[in-house]
Each structure stands twice: as structure tokens, then as C-alpha cells.
Image (cartoon, rainbow, N blue to C red):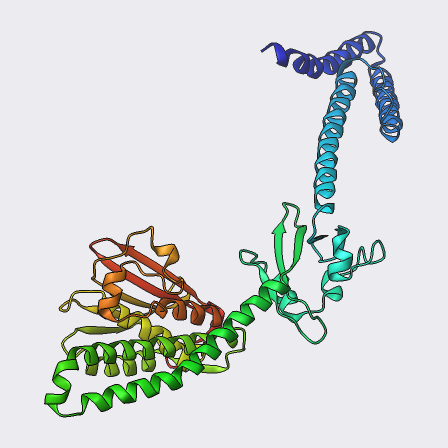
Length: 432
């Protein structure tokens, strides 16, 4: 209540002031003249105080004008807000200076761009890495200095959860990785990192895997031919070595599957960023796949649930491979009598293909690593089922190539659900 007294006093002073002088004017039969004089004095006083306020605000470094009553409290309040604003601005400037000083020491290019995409600030590394000249290029559009349709699309989309990788081109012989962080005011901090050596190592690895896989096919074919020839001899001759021949035949078949998956994975990686131009009917694809699998798994119940008839823009062979891997895994790692369900539906506006099984499920600690090459949850079980350890790696690369997301949900003892969630903009409702 104490804090409110000055405000109430201020509100009551003016009416009582006017009323007092009005009574005096009424007593001397000069009410109108008195009221005019009162309002004239008040207008002059308020105008004078406004003039003082304006002069003070023009030179805010000076102390506030002396005044009594409401005007004095107004001056004091404005002065207090000014000091708070200056303290806040000082802290912000200190933080910005600290951030800029820290970014200057980075080897990577650090670039701050405003809401319109114009360059506001760059560190020294940006000149050597990106070719931005200081201060001449400050204020220019960032995408005009790094001419790349991928970068322009990436910045325009506003989804910066994953970095952008720019592969070498005839104009740019380096591979650059771009990460973007958004500030509260709409400005963006862009990090550009030279990952050329990493890119070269990835290309070398892909080439090595592809070349070795090709080179191994010939000796493996010869070995398989000799094993089949020995197995076709008379039973009396083959009997002493029947078991070793059977094991050799099994391992040769396993090696063939491994080489096949390696070659396929190498192919998918090499064209991962290529444009997809074919509309794929997932209803027909899954129906054909189930017919093929029922020949190899005649006793297994496989159920198709098509709640969506849209098409997906992609590569039919790659999508067939991904879905096939998911379904075969579900068949291998679930009980012989349990049902496997293939769903093609629309979830939250995004086309989704899910493969659901009622197997043993997967411990959550394994899920983040399931798509790594040759990673096995249970090595002994994988060897019994004849898996190569590359199936989910292939699925992941197919998902990335189709701008889709691989989601894995599993509970121990209840089964698993593997879903390919496609981008809403990459499908057509034709055929619904």
C-alpha cells in the first residue's frame, strides 16, 4: 500500500488544485477567467517540462532535469530504464565481442548472415576457404559468393539438423561441409569446414570395396565350380570328404551373398546423391515382393496392409532391395509360425512403409548401431541365419538416397517395427 500512495497523491493533486482555484474564482465572480488561467498555466508548465525532457533525451549522458511531483518521478524512471538498457547493451556487446574473438581463432570459416542472407561478419579463415574478401564482401548475399544450388536450397529450407556436404566440382576442387546455427533474431551463424581429405578417404574406401568385390568374384566362381564338380562324383569317392565339401559349399554360398551385398552397397553409395526420376507404386512393389518370398517361405504368414495408394519418387531396384531386406530380416528373426506385417500408409502426412514382426525384439542399447556395417546383435544367431551384416546398412543408404528416414522401434519379447518414412513432398497421390 505504501508504494501506491505517491501515485494516488499525483492523481488527486491536479483535481484539488483546479477545484481550489475554481472556488476562489467563483467567490469573486471570475470563474471562467480563473479556469482559463489555470489551464493556461498547466499547458505552459507541461510544455516546458516536455521541452526539458526532449532536450535531455537528445543528450542522454547528462543527468535528468530536476523536477517535483509526477514529472520528477517520470524523469527518474526514464533515467533508470536508460541505465538498465545501457547495462544490457554492454553485456550483449561484450558477449558478441567474445564470440567474434573466439570465432577468429577457428581454422574453419565462420560467417554471420542476417535474415536476408547478407553477410554481416566473417572470420579470417573465410577468406582462404570460401574466398570472401574483408571488408569488401560484407553486406553482399552469401549465396552469391558460394554459388551452389544445393546451398541455396539448404539455406532456404531452414532445416539445419543435418549438415550439408558439398562434393568437389570442376569449379570447386574441395569438399566442404556446412553447418548452420540460427540466432533468436533470425541471424544465422554458418560454419564451413574443409572435409576434402575425409571425402577422398570415403571415395577410396568405396572404390576399394567395389574393386575387391569384383576381383573376388572370379576366384569364388572357380572355387564353387570345383566344389560342385567334386560333389557330383560317385558317392563312394565323395563319401570320405562329403562333410568338408558341404561346409565349403555353404561358405562359398555365404561369400557370394556377402559379395553381392557389398557390390550393391557400393553402387548405392556411388549414386546416393543422384536425382530420382521414377514414380514407384509401393503397393505393386510390396505385392510382387511378397509373391517372391512366399515361394521361399511357403509356411510363413505374410500380411499386406495398403491404406495409402500414393507413389514415391525413387529408384525401383533400390526400394525393392530395402524393403526386401527388412522383410527377410523379419522372417529370419521371428518364430516360424508368427506373422509378418507389411504396412503402406500415410502417417502425419508422410508416406510410411513399415515391416512389423513378433520376434524377440532388440535391446535398446543396440538400436543406434544396427545400421553399421557388419554390426550384429547376436553373432551366433546371425551365422545360423546366414546374414551378411549389411542388410540394414543397405536400407539406411537407400533411405538417405530417397530423402527418407529409417525409424526402428523394438521391445524385448514383443517384436520390432522398421519403418521407411518418406518426405511428404516426394510422393504423388495418383492411383489413390
